[in-house]
Amino acid sequence: MTVKQVRAFLAVAQTLSFAQACEMMHVSQSALSLSIKALEESLGGPLFKRTTRNVRLTPEGEALLPLARRLIADWDNARDELRQRFRLQQGLVTIAAMPSFAGNLLPVILRDFRSRYPKISVRIQDVINERVIEMLQVRQVELGIAFEPSSASGLDFTPLYVDRFVAVVSSESPLAGLSRVPWERLLAEPFIALQRPSAVRNMLEQSLRDWKLSLPVEFESHQLTTVGRMVSSGLGVSAVPALCIGQMKELGAHCIPLCDPVIEQPIGILTKSDEELSVAAQALFESLLAFKGRFPESPDRDGGLGSAP
Image (cartoon, rainbow, N blue to C red; front, side):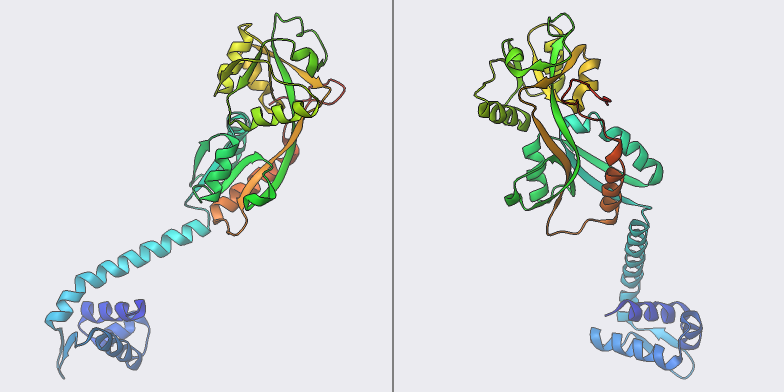
């Protein structure tokens, strides 16, 4: 049973005339008759009683009529919905992003995206780096924003920018007046860290281990906001990606470039290697790329903080 056959049935059922149904569908009478005959054969019996004077529905035809109307309505609705999706007049995009990105840069990008595609909904999951990767791998989201994953992740990585870690201290700290801070000097203070399995925590520990340094962790939190407030209260110091400079300032903390070593990591868009993006997700992907040259600069190695978000 095809859509064409069901439409032919509805046209004849509505007009009870093959001639009028032909005019309605803009087909020849022979083509219409073949469609009805094929439908009747596929269903197993006649749907119309035809005489030289009139056409009427059989009991089986009467039973099919409301079903056929619903089938065509559902088909037309599905067709219209998909057309709107392809024209970016309707749709949903799911994206997972690290909290540092989701809370600082993503709102600006989404505002631009929304102005161009007001009918596209966006569902955001602000989760730690590892969870971004997991959600993409199990197809819970179409796009991710995270650090560059391993080659074994099965994900494609499109770089956006390189982020660099900065020191976070209170405004009363003796470090606040410095233009840059060596890691060894920062680590002489009580350290406030993100809890494991945070990618930021793992990255810091691994990089510092290469320099034979370790984090003297005295306080831990799952949230960057809590870390910033604890630092601004004078409980200790921390280190965060430069992306979070604006957020730390809002919380009352002071940010300074770090050196010896400089720890940096590419951040970009993650997609599943073996899957095509939906039209809506592709549009958001392109919107993210359009901001590539406008992301805040990481602090330079000579001490400048660049432009903070």
